Image (cartoon, rainbow, N blue to C red):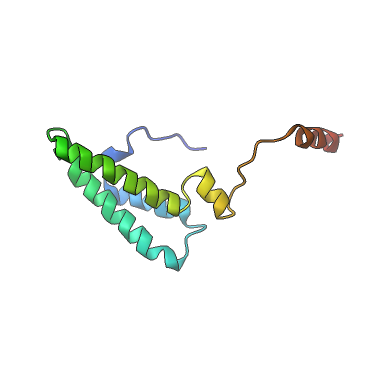
Length: 108
């Protein structure tokens, strides 16, 4: 697993979007184009809003709302464990006692 970047908002939106495209390329479909376009626009808007938010309460409120919007786009595009499970890309399940016992028996 790659290291987590603690400050992705400081990178240019085009770089962030390129990473999103690379990470999701395995499951993106042509029909995701509209959502991806809106996500890119939101990332670009966020980059313009961050410097203003340091000195404006209204801009901070807008930034919080935009962050929620970006998180919603990312979820819709499969960028959290629950969304990936919904898309059939990952299984979100804690191993039960019986599963652990079966795995142990299979190793024998």
